[in-house]
Length: 495
Image 1 (tube, rainbow, N blue to C red):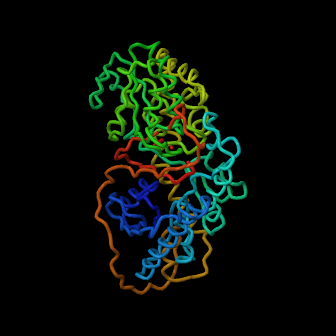
Image 2: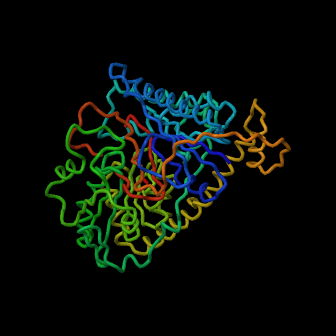
Image 3: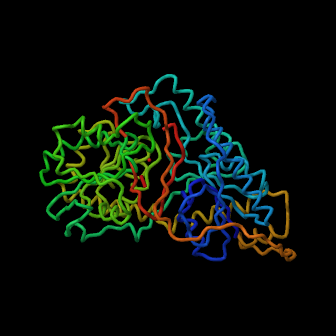
């Protein structure tokens, strides 16, 4: 099989699938992306470069579209070079968020395109924008939110097929488009991410931090510490937790940047919240460890007595899936993305996002009620085994790809396409042997595991005109984890 992947930040959401196809053998894999240091053995890289930034004099509502169209042109040019060299894929897979796939059908009109639809922006209640009453949306921002869907809408009306990882994400898209989008639940390496019964009996070391077996550990993980992932509400829950549990320590993983919300004029949300809660926190028991290695991330979650995951109604982080796989006793926000993974009282405890006292109640319940915590740990691991199995995810992915190739209409019947279709569907096809085509070499990159997960691009840039010290901003561990989750730019989150 011949695969063409397209994602500006290689390998993006395709890390597990690409590794699987390489291990499988017999596949030709080409990946078009911008330049970065990540490499995977057996994958040919074709790099493109955006010629310029969006025009600053243009209306703010069209700048993302401007950049998306430039990406589409650059990708189409790279793909045309591949085609001229004789490479015609059986399937094209890419992320629609950056506009890279908008012109690909002009280069390969007879090849099925499976596009990743991540999120469709809304201004009405129930989604991320204007969700947090602490940060009301300015009226003049509403039209800009709608224009963020320009690339989305073009992608939805182009020929091709869609996929998305959760029912919630699918529900964000217009009803007329949902029938073309398949929910393909992403899996977790259940062997790598698994409970460690011995973790609580050993002293955990994270840099200068030491957590002994007699101490209780509360954990929080995000790419960057910001409101989209509930950092502000988590911090407000801590004074009571620390007061009532004098043997509890808190380890916070995440950077001081902003991934999904409006950028601050200065400072960071960590400093803002420490200033807001000054004098109410025992800082000797709160440990901000920044971004850590994936090994350290796993060790923290395996040792955690209560792991907190909060998010706006937005894309769920990979860290939530991994926490489930590692059997964490979970406190989650009662928001749609989390509710799709966690059932209150069955696989975790849920609390209202904007009520820190209720979040504190849930944390304290897990720290003091050992039978409950044990039951929830076992149940959430079982749920991960049922719904987050990596092998099942990859098998479903391959079935979807095979079906699209089999059913895709074509106006160009060539011996090479007939032979390719036969291989993908296991149906014998009688066709003359294609002539050998001399191919010029394609520039490639060496290969070794990605050193660190590609950082997801910042999302929503939309926020109130002024940012006050009462505001707040998460980082998934910037670690060489098995599945780096990049995300698309947003008018502003897991793994």
